[in-house]
Every structure is written in C-alpha cells, then in structure tokens.
Image 1 (cartoon, one colour):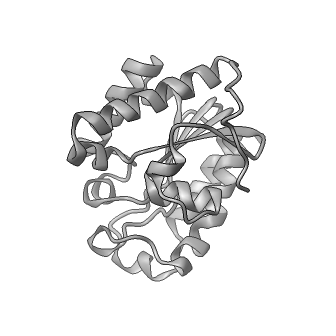
Image 2 (cartoon, rainbow, N blue to C red; image 1 turned 60 degrees about the vertical axis):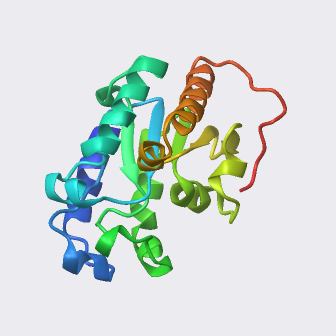
Image 3 (cartoon, one colour; image 1 turned 90 degrees about the vertical axis):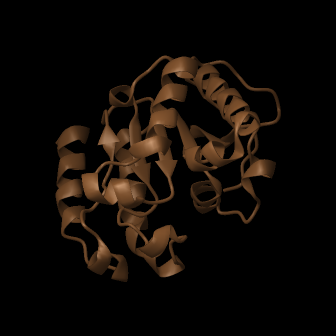
Length: 198
C-alpha cells in the first residue's frame, strides 16, 4: 500500500475516533493536509475554531501567515508540504491539550510522521515543540537551531498566532527559522548548534 493509501486509511480511522473527551465537542476531525511524499512537514498544536469548522489545519489568519512565509522563504505552497497537529480535535476554548488527549492522539501523529517521512519537520509553537522533543524548555530558548529527530531535522519556530500578536520582530524570527528549514531541505549542514533532545 502506498503512503497516500495508508494516510487515507489512517484518516478514515481518525474520523471516527472517540479515544478521548475532545471527540464529544468537535465539529470535525482535523487530520492533516498536503503531499504524502513531502520533504517538509509542519506540526502545530491543535485545531482552532476555523479549523474545526473547515476540517483543515491552519486556516484563517494564522494559516494565511503560514502560507505567506512558506511561499516567500521556502518557495512552496501547502500542496508541496504536509501539515498536521498534535491533536486532531479542537480543545474547548483553544486551551492546551491535556496529557490524556495527547496520549490518545499521539499514535495518529507518530504514524503521519512515519508515512510522510519528511527530511525536515517544523514545529509551530511551544506546545508542538515540547511534545515532539520531550522537553519543558520554551520556544524562545529552543528556536534558532535544528535538532536531530527520527532521522530528520526538527526546526522549532513560533506559532503563527503568536507572530500575529507579537508583530514584526517575531515574524522576522519565524522567517529566519523558515530559511533554516529551506537550507536543511537543500542538504546544507548546520554548524554544531544542532543537538538531540530525544
């Protein structure tokens, strides 16, 4: 079975998921979008209101900023990467997902990463970065370098929503992180700043 077929089967399973309490409040499961053979994957925290309504990650203002930075700094559109979240259902009031919710959803994200098998994985925000790297460090300390992660490079950056709130300086730092991701996609080696947390 191709990665595309396996992702489709995984998505079908996720659409009926009732492993945690988030299932009771969702409009739809926000599984993930993009190319199943993408070299670049983005992982965010969880769906917001717009995502819950449309069934697609990173729509609305955050999604527009993500699309803009992808286009301007990497030269791709969302059909050339893969975008997913740590949890697939919207937490009430956009709160952080609870440990039990993460545990319930983790097999879906782990399998998405395995099937897409990206060369570079960009985590968007504190929550996704901490979850995948298994750390309690904050994004301001973690960003600015890459980390070895499951045979790929992981590049932490801010969540687009934080950049919209934080203004030009945060957007500029996101741009630098996207440039780093593009360099890693091209096969360039980073200096010894790279580290492994997990």
